[in-house]
Image 1 (cartoon, helix red, strand yellow):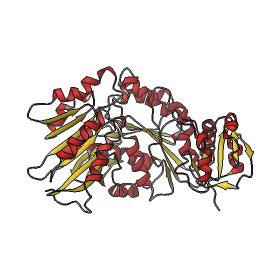
Image 2 (cartoon, rainbow, N blue to C red; image 1 turned 135 degrees about the vertical axis):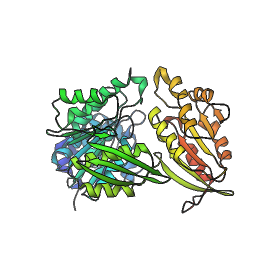
Image 3 (cartoon, one colour; image 1 turned 90 degrees about the vertical axis):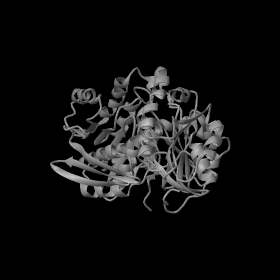
Image 4 (cartoon, rainbow, N blue to C red; image 1 turned 45 degrees about the vertical axis):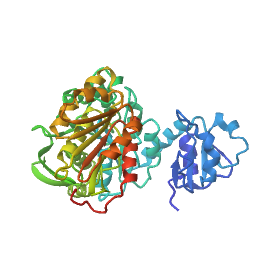
Length: 477
């Protein structure tokens, strides 16, 4: 059998000590005792809310082949009899195993960061590279201090392309993660007002995102958005670090991967891009100008990582938006159907505008409405009232007919919206849910967008539970 890791290699990489009758190897790594599958190793990570050591027994009962536990927690495990590797600290040991995975791999590694579009770009890379070789990427948005080492440690030795997402809330968080990943290609999608409450301005955010450059492998490539105001700042950072391979994307005439034209459709789009003196026509399986911009970054990163550009471009046509990031549902309601656009995963001013633009491009049936359901954008800092109120203009421009708002900050948007618009504001998602469920009618297009912490995904879930899906999109109404 081909193991993900032999236990001998794990012990050496993590500097652990074996306890009990260890298996020869493991076929996977889990930090969740509920979803662990037979033959996987359970890493008992201590998180902010729960300690994995408390669930070690459940992990074994659910099929874990072995445990990785901290020395100091052994007394708390009581009489649990199970094969174990005992380490000084489980999270640090996971990081060491991740670094060992990177050392042993011959994969071309791509790392993605940015204020908006990290996960979408990572998923587009995963999808489009799959026709060019064996791809490893995180199953979810595992982009933090435990998600990155976990994704690295899960990377099989026989991987051709590794794709990693690296996020942050504060300065200094990307630096240790990029040092683990050591990408051959690093991508910064864009700089926007995400987590602005933790930074003075966008330049500080750009400086924090620029930490990804510090881990770039020797001779590696940096991919930057040529259209953003912080481009020059990022380019200077790259020059200071001695990075000479800087590739750009965007609409700018100076971009290496340049967007020439973009043509949206209800369920997708086509972009035309100038790349190395050739014009490429690239169909996209998801609509939105922001998706086209991410696609340019994907084309650049994949090409620089050695992938076949023809195959990568062709694969983008079959990409579909993810849950919470533009996924579309066609649901049957009394008298017809509605279209639900699920953008509920997270939000900042830039992604809000992109989602509102998506809603504006959607066509409701005659006499039906465009409905926006918006929750608070969190971590916006002292400018939060202004940033929320400024969403009024994009909503008007998009031709939105009704706006349903949840949260204290969204009260500022409610006050800024013009009188002819149908506006409902409630203090929280629970209070708003009934209004939304009763509001939808045949032919409507409804878009849900908020920061994850507001819980607006519950409104999406409620709509999906109440109204059955139609197998094929019918003409609304």
